[in-house]
Image (cartoon, rainbow, N blue to C red; front, side, top):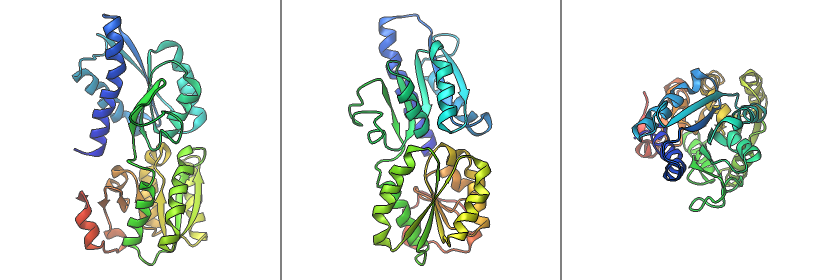
Length: 290
């Protein structure tokens, strides 16, 4: 099962759990789900459709026992907060995606049940007390098995490009996940003989300047920190990494599918950069994309 399918499956179950408990007390009520997606219908519409489909398979059908109020908002704190605030008066449960969405929900929602999807470090961010016992009003699905996953991406790059010593790290300004990822990367980089150069963006409009900055800082490879902004802009990031000849490691399979070099699966596309992937790394790959 692909990661994105797995997230959809688990996420829909996580959403169903609080409603099942509530329905036991208030049978026949139509529950209102607020669904905030960090992008546009073009970038996240398939997620919204899969969400509705899976809930229907679990017995929660729009128009019968649930309604879904979907809002698309830019993957930036202010936009996510505005979308959540607009929904609060009319919903019984909130679903958000990514670190920015999760942090916005924690700030604004105190009692309403919240389900978060694809958040890297919910305990560190203070969204839940622990992975086994979330506590409070928030629960959901983590994106990373551990914060050390970021360091593993750096190790993968080192295996592919052993000569690389200066690594650009691309992240979204204002995303709390950037600080968490940088801590992990900074702990690993000295042992790999690597120096990190953090470059932050606020929107897709910043990408060309960001890659110019990477080159001016003599970066030899690129780590893209996982987040809503880097996911939504996965295609231009992959394209620019290839144009600037920066071997890149990503968190999302979808970025590799549109031309990124490798993701932590890892899924690999290397011909455009003239690289040879080491055999041991290929053996560990779940899928190789020619």
